[in-house]
Image 1 (tube, rainbow, N blue to C red):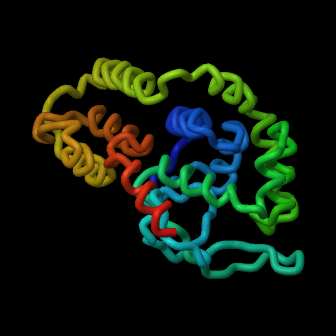
Image 2 (cartoon, one colour; image 1 turned 90 degrees about the horizontal axis):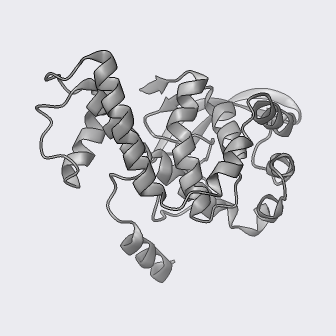
Length: 246
């Protein structure tokens, strides 16, 4: 199952996440990450939250990926010819977890040029040259998306983020209030199918005490919190365990 977003809604969902991971030390420009996520998904975000075509490969579980995978058909270029193949993709509990796991990949020697890129355009070129994708037009497509949509404005904004979690929560509360006022849906609603996992995560970390009095906008806000990684258990302990055992 997947959720389809228009471009504006896609940005509204992802900008807080890409800016958060950038603030936490990601080498990837927010503009490049947004462009890549749109190119790889077309706005269709799968339940497994893999927005960058990150395959299972021979990788071991990390603090952000527990080893779960999904198999689908995909198009790849083999000797310059587009071919349909089957691929195994890493599955994630949130979009935030995907980006953090992807950043672990970018720490490898293979992606040094990606880390050292001084501009978004240079980083787009580096992603292709380092072998992230087989499409010979991959870099050009990324650059076209970020240029046409002025995505570099989000690179500058991310430099001024001081407390990403607090700001995201405050913004989500404002959006929730606005949505409830606009939709006038403050009464009880059943849990939508797309919000079940977010509702369960919210209950698990005690972000909410009950789902019986939640409206549709509330479930939307819970889903956004889950995508930001704010409904996950603290990953610090897992990271220490992973560093110790790797």
